[in-house]
Length: 173
Image (cartoon, rainbow, N blue to C red; front, side, top):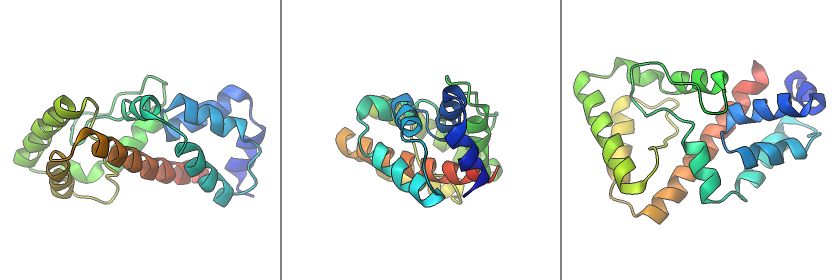
């Protein structure tokens, strides 16, 4: 068994909860993950994370989305409401390819983020790992044409992907 997972399985409630909140800021998701302990393997953890995420609803999704910094910001990500410094560091890593973007692309991302938030009422969420600022901007522009219901589901799927990547990072730290 993975040593991080083994330690998490026996950790106190708050330590286990904090680890899950770093991977996904939805408190109900994190609490349910902790309630499922012990989890036997890395594969079982990933499957459980998806199963639990599939039971989340709009308030849970919005809580998770609110823990993400805006895409393309050059200043460091703020620590989330849950105090997850690890989550903020991971956000910076995930968005690292935007750091070399031109001022024009960053300005378009900032303007698109504002339009997105005004249109949908939540932060633009995209699994940015491995994507350039230009790719992220193109996805944002495409998604601005969506309706709120479809966009909420798309953002929830992007959050699920981010959560899985972060679980993997957590397991090797």
